[in-house]
Image 1 (cartoon, rainbow, N blue to C red):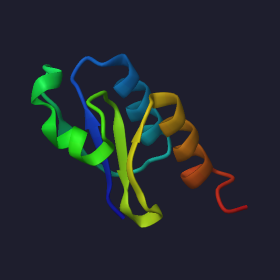
Image 2 (image 1 turned 45 degrees about the vertical axis):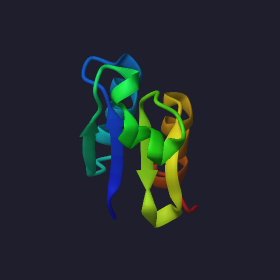
Image 3 (image 1 turned 90 degrees about the vertical axis):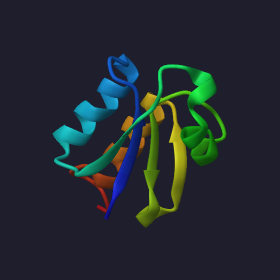
Image 4 (image 1 turned 120 degrees about the horizontal axis):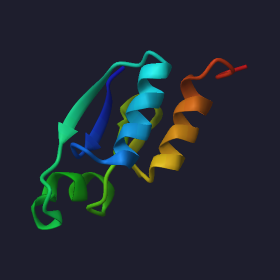
Length: 85
């Protein structure tokens, strides 16, 4: 399983997702994106937009989920204590 997170250093929304990943003890591959939206071609290819954070979870066919609140809810639902219950 390889979760991937597109993030920006110092981004509070990214930090919220990272806190949830750490809380659930999930390993992930970090992709730091450039500060300039114009240079974020990689994250745009994945998610269709240039904002971060963006989560990729190939195991569950998530190809580029934006919005920190949605990502946190998804991680909790998919990998949290009650996942699959």
